Structure formats: structure tokens, C-alpha cells
Image (cartoon, rainbow over all chains, first blue to last red; front, side, top):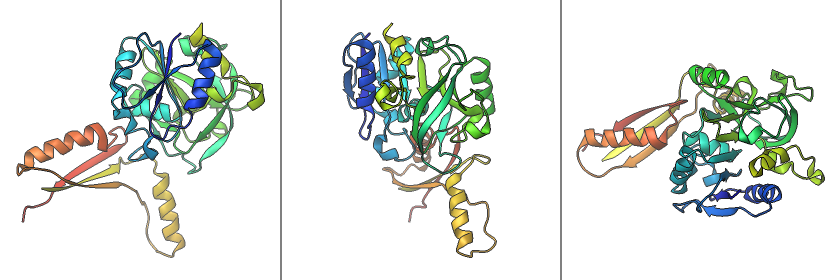
Length: 227
Length: 82
């Protein structure tokens, strides 16, 4: 398993992503600068980490989505290669058109930074095959613009085709308004593309890989990539 | 040529920033203000004299970068040449 982490100006979770990948695959990922035009040969999975690329100028992820390396990421995805976008990486993938929808300002106007329960909705994809169907996991969230929105038709497709990967829920797995931290449509915390080789999610699985920092619920995601 | 591009949220899209601004205006005793929506303005200078071409260029710029057309509309004004 060869992994690459893309580094944009203003990324700040690349170290966490690299640590999770190294733990799961046994080797450090390549760190690729946004102005590069190519991914390393035989890259299996590309990770777009969290942070505030370009200071969130214009719209979150908008400028990073047009960086030179994103053409190579799009080609990689078109070939069926795996792409994972976490938090700001999710915003970038939506802005790049590699995922449906858009992330808007949290409906409650607050930056949320806390542990959050999620229900794993679809375990048929490479990214989520390490989880049980409907499993409730606890990841960390830290974002001000994680309110997932899509037009009705897109949302219907997402729901109809099982593209919702994770939903915000309470500790018992109940998906309701009270457990929705940012106003996302249908409590969607993460989505797949139509081919299920691209995943974006606002929560941070890469921060839940060690009991020392709150749990290991994020490990199965990265271990599934290495398997 | 000088141009101005205005990007606004589509009707019905939640605008928490607009709501916060509206709340501040109310707290400052501006009576009768409501439905505040925040948008963006881009002032852009563009080479050449062909207004239609400039409009087409900026239209493409809006579609590809300046606006996210899932949730935003845009309008392009080309300033009248003096």
C-alpha cells in the first residue's frame, strides 16, 4: 500500500494523517506539495488532510481545489484510485467536483470542537469495510464549515445509492437533530462518490488511532486501506 | 476595462453570517431591517475593449472559481468606458 498526503499552504493535519497511515501500512506516506504536477508512481491512496488551505479564502477548499496537483488527483480517482479527504480535504474534494454537494458554515454559527458519535452507513466500500454495518464509532470533529448541503436531486441520488458513508448520531446510534452538530442534510458526516473510491468526511478518524488520545475507532479505516 | 462580479447565495440557502449581521443591526436599533444576506464583490480589471468577450471570460471565471454554483448565483457588470 503506497500512500501520498497532499500538502497545501495552510494544511495543518498532515502530520496526523501521516501518522495514521504509517501505523496502518508500516511505512510513511509520501508528502506531496500542492504545486507538484504528479503523484509518485504506483500511488494507491491519496489523502487530503485537514486544516485551512489558503486561509479558507474565497470559500473553504476553493483555491486548493484548483491547485496543480489536483489534476493528478482527479486522474488517479478516474482510474479507480482511492482518495480520502478529511475535514478541509472533504471541502476541497467537493469544490473540485470529485464529491457531490458543498460544505457550508455551521448552521449554529459555532466552531465545533468535540468528540462526536457517528453511525457507519455503508460498509461495502474499501474505506469502511473494517466496520460492522450500523456500527457506532466515536471520532473527533473540529470545524466551522461542515454543514453538508446538496440540491434535492443530488441528495436523492446520495441516499438512493448508499453514498452516505457516515451520519452524526448519539451514543446509541440514533440519528436525530439533537445529534447533528452543524446542520448537515440528513446528518451526513461523510460521503462517497458514485464509484465509492473517493470518500470525504468532516470528522477526524486519524485522531482516533491511539488509546492515549481518546480511542482507536479510526484505526479500522486506515487498516482497511492497508489490507 | 473594469468589471464587477457580484456573488450571492441562492434564495433559500441558509446564511448564518447574514443572520448574525441582521441580529447586530437590530441590537444597534436599526428598525425595520430584515432578510440580510451576505455576498461577495470582486472588482476586476480586464485587458482589451471587447465587452462581450470580457463578459464571456468572467462568466467562465465565475463558473470555474468565483462562485460555487451549487449554492451561489453571480452577476457580471462591465463598467461603461469613459
